[in-house]
Structure formats: structure tokens, C-alpha cells
Amino acid sequence: MTDNRPIGIYDSGLGGLTVWREVRRALPRESLLYLGDGKNCPYGSRTKEEIRLLADAAVGRLVEKGCKMVVVACNTATAAAIDFLRDKYHEIPIVGMEPAVKPACLNTRTGVVGVLATERSLDGDLFCRTAARYGKGIEVIAVPGRGFVELVESDREQTPEAEECVRRAMREMLDRGADQIVLGCTHYPFLMEALRKVSAGSGARIIDPSPAVARRVVSLLKSADAFADKAQKPFYEFDTFADEAYRQRLRKKAEKALE
Ligand code: DGL
Image (cartoon, rainbow, N blue to C red; front, side, top):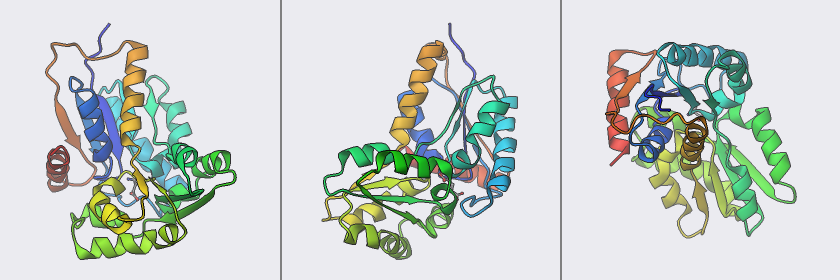
């Protein structure tokens, strides 16, 4: 069997494009429908209830548009709403983001792991449970990436200001010898250059979970026998709750992310 319907990918804004890129690379025949809210971004310091309403509206729109699966490419929305979304939209698989704390804890040699994520992700059950489960005997230093999302949303990733912001957030974990640093927000890989620069020489490995999410999408489609037809020419669409200018920005940033 084949299924030519698109895969929906949703984030509060531009960040989920780091997941979109990996899904597109892993599944070049699949059509992708990306919804970057944009109007209500950032989500990171909103209440769980607010985020759940926003995520419901977004996933509802993707389901209405006929997606065969939705990837919630937003750690914050996953933390606040994944169970609710899976329950409400049970007719299709909903894939969420998982903080890569497990591989980090398994691979650390110094016994110190750093986690960068939004405030709401860090105080969510998902992160607390994962950290408690895999972080036994390991020092897990979790720090919110203050200002990171705003930098990415305004295309200021390659500025001295971005480097300073990243330096501030990473200081404690690097000082304490973290050798694994987990990016727990899909916006953060856009700051990879600054993250690498600031951690250069420390030997720390920076973990972007998006390739693992793309592998999960592949495996779900495989087990459901729901890949798109080999002859199908994929389409890539961008949608938003903001305005047309933001929709164009999503498209441009997506193209740039593939370079
Ligand atoms: N990109 C999102 C995440 O993975 C949300 C960032 C935000 O809107 O604060 O958490």
C-alpha cells in the first residue's frame, strides 16, 4: 500500500524547520506541510493551558488538510500537550520531540550533562521523568536558552549578540565539565555556529535530536506501510497563523536550512 498524503510538521515558529530538513532528507519522496504558528511565538514561557490550545488549533488544521501523520516539532508543545493531542487526533500517528537526555547520559564520560531548552519544557513532566530515569548518578545541568528563540525568529543567529547570549547560557555547564550538551528546543540548532564556537576546546558534543525524530518518522511509515508512491512528485507547503510575510520567511528559511 502507498499513501500520498503529506506529513504535517508543526512548531511555534521557524524552529521546527530543523526537523523539517531532516525529514525531507530522510524521505525525499514525501510531501511535507509545515505549519509555523508565528503569531503566538515564543511559546516557551506561556502556560501549559495556553500552549495546549495553540497546539490543538495547529494540529487540528494539519489534520483537516489531510495529513497522514503530524510531527510536533516543538519540545514545548510536546511537553504541554502530546497526550492530549494523541488522544484527540487518534486517527493518525502524532510524533513528539523527546529530550535526548538518554543518549547524553549513556555517553557522558565526565558524568556531567548540559541541557538547553525553554522554561516550559524544563519544568514539564517529560523532561523531569527522563532526567530522573537516565540521570542517576549524573549531574544534569538544565538551563533555559534565554533569548535564543527571539534571535532565531529575527534572523540574528550570526551576530555577536547571539554569541554572547549562548556564552551566558553555556557558562555553568562548561565550567562544570559537561561533555554532552542536549538541545531541547528545535530553534536551537539554528544557533549551532555560536554553540560550537563557545564550546570549542571543551570537547563537549552538542546533540541535536532532529535526525532521531526523522528516523522515527521513517520507522512509523514503514510499519504502517504508508510511504508515498515512488512515482509521486512531492510538494512542500508552508502555513502559518501569522501573515503572508511570515509564510514567505518560513519558505526562505527552509530553503536556506537545506544548504
Ligand atoms: N521550538 C520550540 C521548542 O522546541 C518552541 C520555542 C518557543 O516558542 O519558545 O521548544
